Length: 155
Image (cartoon, rainbow, N blue to C red; front, side, top):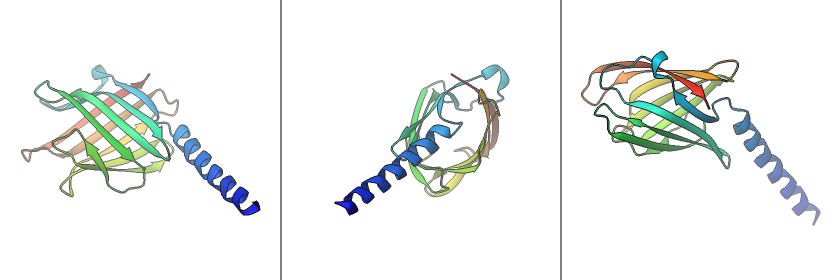
């Protein structure tokens, strides 16, 4: 009985710690693209809404936007900010993504296709938590170098 109680208490602490860590992450919540403050090359995909939410001890990132042809784009990624590849759904150009938490307000990421990095980026959340800047560089599907700066406002 005492062993069972110890195991349950330990499991509860681990779960509470994971939920607390996700809740304290300044990326968590809904972000809307501030297109007036952003810089995209012609034909770039624009994620107009990005949502970060806790799912157990992981984070789910959902993006909605438009591609260069104006078609709707919806992707989903669930994983940890641990620098390891986690599967992406909904993208023809990306099949996995890794996120790495650099510090409390900075995260880096890499999109990959067939194990090869196609885009690198950095996300910096403002100290007040009300905005964030996502800088991206890489190579598009046609082999052309691309870069963009997207500014998002917290909803």
